[in-house]
Length: 350
Image (cartoon, rainbow, N blue to C red):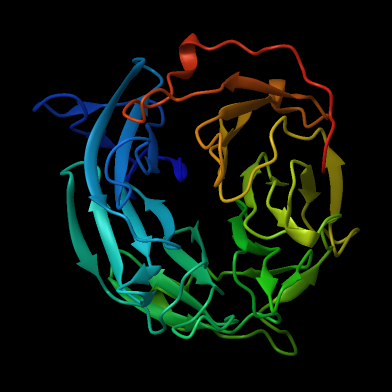
């Protein structure tokens, strides 16, 4: 499994997202519809399978099969999935494809100004911000671009302080975007930098720096350097998990980040309970009061773990293994039928 993402609840008018999920009649969902993207266990590994899971109605379905684009960044914006960059014809590309979950059709969107793979992509308000990655010659990039889906255009942003690929990025509700970890010249990074994406960027089309300020600011580094990690936001905190660390070790440690405040200008990372399985190139998502870790680049590649966060309290609690096998690669995980197993001891590499 490559990616698990949530369908945005409504459009800019506040209406609920509607999709034609299981038959020809449109239906409206009161809660998020979850979308998975990944290669099939059996069959053509050059394609991706897109599946949806409706937790409210306990139904799942395959909605499409599309051509796989290795090392692409994938992000959801309302009912559209954007597949950004990645390898096309044996080299990184600047192409962007948009796939509509509602119509189940794809289209080409405006291309980035620079080809890139292994980049990060995050939605920030009405924009998508893409950072870093590797270029057309597979060199590490510091450049960043902002995409306005409603206008179908890209705007360059100031470059990162550190060029990097295999990084991740997470936006928090106040509009700050954090770029985390990554790799360059065989060096693994724990460093973090962040910016405040201005709300007026969609209107002005450019960024006006504050007097004496810089766009990217340093934040506290993680406790462990990692690339090919995954991270997500939950209740204003950032969780970063797994990835590849020194000596190419796949790790299972999880860290929680309290973003910078006036009292703590760099923020603070805290190690919490590790996952059961070490993972790289996987998805970590927040859904309701739980975190889910899904997939892995290596076998088993279709396992799922859940981290309970009852009552939105962020105390350290163990991950629980929910499911070891997704099935034959043709079905989405049905979480409502699964129950946590007994916690496993935290052994092996962090």
